[in-house]
Amino acid sequence: MALSSIKLYCLTFLTIFFISTVSLVEAKPQARIVGGQESLPSDWPFMVAVMKKVRELRLGGQAISALSMSGEDAGEVKGELAGCNKTGEQLECLDVVGAVCLIERDGVTDFSEMVKICQAAGGIGAIMFNNEPGNFAGTLQDFKATIPAVGISQEDGAILLASVGEQISLHYSAQVPDSAFCGGALIDTRWVLTAAHCMVNQQPESLLVNIGGHDLETDQNNVFGVDKIISHTHFNSDTISNDIALLKLESEVAGIEPVARADADFIIQAIVAGTNATVLGRGLQVAITGTEEPPTTEEVKKLFQVDLPLVSNTDCNQVFLANLGTPNAVTDNMFCAGRVEGGIGTCFGDSGGPLLLPGDDGRFQLAGITSWGVGCAQPELYDVYARVPFFAEAIDAVISGKSINLEPISPEPIPPKPVSSEPITTGLGSGASGLPFLLSLGILGILRRLANNQRFLNSTINQPSYLSL
Image (cartoon, rainbow, N blue to C red):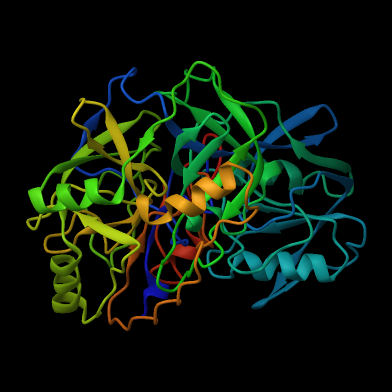
């Protein structure tokens, strides 16, 4: 199987996001901590939770929370609520010109197809309600909608069904989200480094970041809007190469020291020494195989960490070749970490989060960004991280204002697409199915891996606040 079927840790897109029954989606990057421990609240002030703003529907005097679909338009609309119906296998949205479409999720049809039908028929917005208890969000995959598209619970869907023909508005709520679809690290007073796969189909106006919060339900003092998303120009969603992105915040962060970045030699020495790295995230905490559907679990609100030994690219590639038949899956802009016996590691929902190495002064340095893996915490299959020093010049050029793009200072060839027979996972957070926040394809936070199969793309998610990839 090609790396295009890799599971992204992130949360995906998607996103990425809400309520108590959560099924992670196979979006394009995402992952979560397995076998780790809860961090101390004061340990990692530079840790970032990447979140989707909460959508809200207003019907008369009633407000209903909604979860954004990854790939939707970030606008706000108001119009008549119109129902779409399924005739056999065909969804029909009739008389919806200038109206907001109400569509029941069927667990089979891609969300993107449903939104396309509404949009093509003249709808100005799409609301999908769950066909089973709980809220959900999802990803529109490669389709970029020009209308807002959100997911709501089965219960709220019943309320809207009884209100077809009335006026409804779809806008952003002032509520602060309490779930994330990907992680990140504050590397400058106005810049966050995360995974590119987490940002697929995301728009800055629909994102918020929580900096330094340990418990997303209670620690909401440092929440910032995102002014700009700058993904690496050579990010390859098939090979997961160049999997980094910068988020420029709407304002500078005061009182929090950005994390220092490790240099290339420091990582090489740490790999040779077999140093243990510390990885942070709020992802899935259950070990699963590369072909296994992520289980339904509650969202992780608090920050967790896990210590993993670094592994050389040579050893890591030998493992992937032996187990998957995939040659050279790990390139120079990546590196690996994990135990050969498995049992601990990153997983869905951890995408974009930092891998840290202790410096000689005892302070931790940012060495990697959670990117992809095969399953979660599996024996003889290591987790893969974007190698931060590889992109140092490109990152510095953007932060200093010398460049508006995150790209190699010297042109580099795009690596050939590896061939594999097994699905791979990534740390992204979004998927055609519901993501915790993908509102958390939500892609490691899902989106640790690319969607394994179509079933993931239409799964439900627990998101008391939103989605991932």
